[in-house]
Image 1 (cartoon, one colour):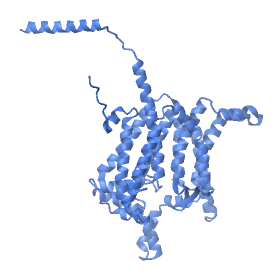
Image 2 (image 1 turned 90 degrees about the horizontal axis):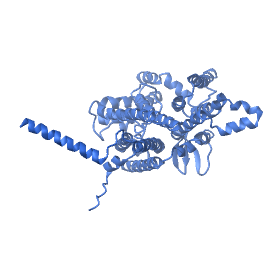
Image 3 (image 1 turned 30 degrees about the horizontal axis):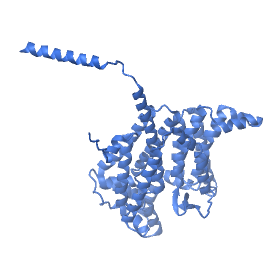
Image 4 (image 1 turned 30 degrees about the vertical axis):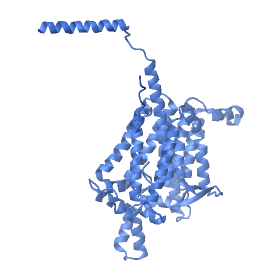
Length: 465
């Protein structure tokens, strides 16, 4: 008999995919949106870099390809212990990157660099690494390991120090274990990020707090942690004002105060009452260009949008392809495009919650919930910024906005999520395969039952005749 030909193709791949297919489809749709949106929205970027949009979209194809490779590499990791072992060093890895950037270390192969008036990136042989994008993923992984290690009392190095030296015996208590391995890493990471971006510090700090809360850390202790962070920011604001702007704990505090102080309203007043073509007028116009143009893009998009390639605000907003990608999508694809994006990220949040509920590995559960929250909340924050519900913070739209570091970091996050979903699926399938039927019939019993059924049907037919 001829052997049945093995089916191939995309849909067969989806059918045989062992991870969560809903999340897989979300990832693929976001990547398709990315290619379309980056091609249409990068007119100003092409001018600034003396290139063309076709070259930029080719670069985006390579980035998407690299992202798919990273997703596949994470997906095919079959043992959660691999992720657990790597996560243990997430804080050390983040600390090295942040200190390298904050201390402005420059070596031939890795150099700290400035972007948009703040030290936020490292250049690795010319390639830009946006440190915060890497750190947010690494710290979610680390904190998932830390809360799991605390639950299992598996802080070996802390226990060793406490046992060998009486002066440090206090480290063996549960509170100090959490302080050293959980709370201090959160505070240190947030403080170092605050040097380059207040909004990034608040967002990443918030994600870290949510992660440890999911991990079961006491809510009162988390509140105390938040109070320390708030006091630090208030101290920075006090010193900034009391010393007439001479003492600045963070270079971004003046920017934060400007955004919280409704600088847009002040700039609008300046624009309306100053003489056109003066420096004062031009500075106010430049400050308002991005937020106002983003709102204009949303208004002009309407329900149906202008259609792909017909955006006008892409010639006005310098970072439309990054910080204001949602506004661009609404302008070109209208309300329906916006709804598709919202549904994709809402579906990710719902699907992630369902997977976390069915996950019986504590570390995997916290990682899954933390990464899904990180991606979804950043997406919704990006949308809120674009419609002026919250002040501008520069958060990109995950897997859609232009930017290699962000795209690849989120690809790793999605790869880990799909890998864990695969482990859940495989475990459930094994349990189903091992399960025995409640009632077992022999072939003879089945045959006798069918004969009885045939006889009953024949009797009913005869009665009707």
